[in-house]
Length: 454
Image (tube, rainbow, N blue to C red; front, top):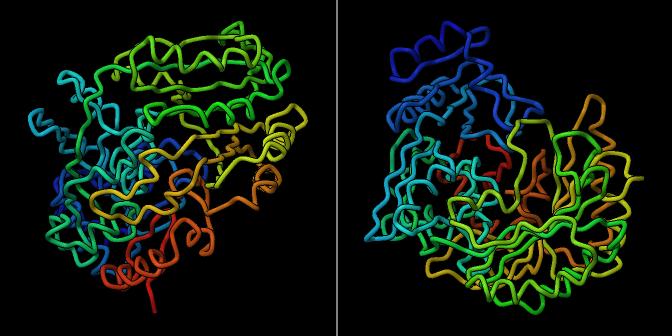
């Protein structure tokens, strides 16, 4: 196999790494440390032509092909060719058109930085180090989602190398079927080398978090749920519960507590934001309050997520509503001290612009969902099954309200029926037909593969 992969050196400008090379482990390891890739060769792509050459090589030798940007959620198999796009990190902003051209390996943090001087922002997510392109291909549920919808709804153009090694410029006019599938259908239809997206006027917003002790405010999740029924779509919010160990380096107010952190991103004035959030303060004693008016460049501080790679698994459900008894069960089964593994529970308020059909249709499913429920746990040696069982138990009471799942929040392998559940039935059938049209031989090995129609 090494003799074959050495042919790649003459075909691409970027470096090619094989097992045993100094940079092999660094290139194959992303943010998710559980079950990393073990490819026969890694093409550290320097541009779209390197991607095209790698696709042609893999197709010609019938080798599986996977793609990795930042590596947050991969579950691709061993062997074959891995295209690493992290060197393709260019961002160009057109402030007059309010657009940005984003290369395949750019993070949202890089897009935010480029857009901020113009008073503009992308529809980025809670963690700025996530790759902008894969996030968008999966739909993209961001901090301003209730006001502006999914990130996929704001894509103007995608450059993509399909399995026939053809570099295509894809728009709603040039290739409406592929444009539809790429915006919500993930990486099943080709390797995206860049995208043009719309930006929104959001130089500043009112945001941050309020933290409560779950032991002192056991009703916090349901109180947040009731509050979400009262807010306008300018308010996007979430709530996360997790245990804070009693160790130095953490905020003293949170150490040794089971903490519920309500995260706020509101496109309103500071005064209006304060007025809208005020009812939350009656939930219980506030342990920590970081709410303020802040520049969008500091949007990553709202969720303040850990920035170190680790091994983890996650499951989620999109639901019509949140039943109070299901929330009470969730608090006890996953968020409380008796839980067999450390579990981070997340609830996100949907609706608003997310529920409206975009100007150009895309494959994003279940727009009618009112909330997203996620459970995430670190996975140590031998803990895989107990983590899976804990997640199943935590989410079981929501079954009556479940519409499906979100692939962007599914960090772990999924069966075909689970993948199917991420889409409306007609959309899923259309996606399988397009997979057969654009990747008939199954060259692309993606995190959550949509099978080709037979």
